[in-house]
Every structure is written in C-alpha cells, then in structure tokens.
Length: 152
Image (cartoon, rainbow, N blue to C red):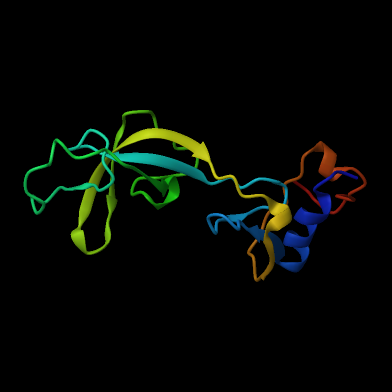
C-alpha cells in the first residue's frame, strides 16, 4: 500500500495535512521526517575574522576591534536573503542578513549542520485548506489505487 499513500491522499482529497513543529527551532516539518530538516549556519563577523556581532554594511559601526575575542553565532539558513530550497552554503562564504534596527549585516559561514530537533518531542499540527491540485504518487504509494478515470 505504500508507506506515505495515506498522507498524500488526505492532502489531495480532503485538503488537510499533518506537520510537526520542531521543539528546538520552531520549523514546520513533514511527518515523513523523524528529525528536523532545517539547515542551521554557524556564522562569524567578517570584520573580526570570527566575532559574535556582525558588521553593518552602511558604515554605521566604525572601526572593528581586531583584539576582540571571536564569537560564533547561529542562524537558520532559510532566514537569509537569497535562500531557496536546495541552496548549499560553503565554509568561508560571506552572507548578508537583516539584523533588526542596525540594518543589513555581513558574516562568514563557519560551518553548516541540520537542526537536532526530533519529531517524538514535537507538537503536531493539522492544517486545513491546503491546495493540492495534482496527485503524484511513486510506485510504493500508488499500489491499489484505482486511476481508471484518468486520461493523462
């Protein structure tokens, strides 16, 4: 019958889907994943070579303190401008992001990792009104499904 057949049929026929909220980062995940799929970036300030803040691009911050102790901070990849599904960030790549009232900031990617949240500790949500106009099923999901009414 296919392990995910019921999830996709429910989405297509009843416009409802079930997801879980990661207890660690708050990301909404599909029920087929046991661990959170959100990519987290370890970022460092480019002016300090690694510091905990980030340097304003508009020239507001003044000179960087080169004697400061570098601190690394974490940010979700999907919150950065220019992110799209499948986007891969590389070590030492420079990224820009909005940092509240201080404007646009620049930081260097130190490392990337997935969030460590697990579905067994999560809150589950049922969403209604999901628009699903096309039903696509793989071999394992289409076994026993009567598609005699389809023409294409």
